[in-house]
Length: 132
Image 1: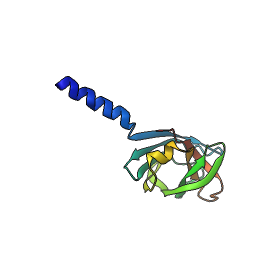
Image 2: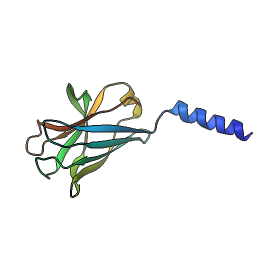
Image 3: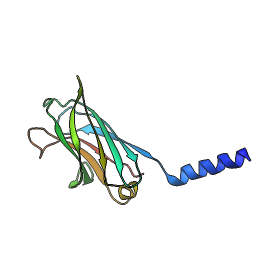
Image 4: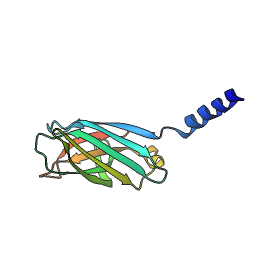
C-alpha cells in the first residue's frame, strides 16, 4: 500500500510540473549587473523574486518588468515588477506578486528586464524565462 501511495505522489508531482522556475539574469550594456530571479507558481498569480549585483551605474532604484520576447528581441511590457533596490552592500533585489500564471508562461516567450535608473530605455540586466 505504501508503494502505491508513493507512486501516486510521484505521478501527481510530475504531472503538475514545476512549482518554481529559476532565471539567470545576465549583464546587458556593460552594466555588470548579474544574478537570478525565482518565479514561484501561486495558482492565479506568480511571485517573482529578483536578486542581482549592484550595477556599475550606481545604487539608485531600478525599474523591472516582465517583457514579451527574448533578451535579444525585447517586446512589450507584460507585467511591472517592484523596484529593484539595494538590499546589501553589493546586492539589489525585489519581490513582486504578479497577475500571471504558469500557463501564461507556457504559451509565450518572456524575459525579465532591469532598466538603467537614469535612462529606463537602457536595459542593464536580462534573463529569459524558461518554459515551465
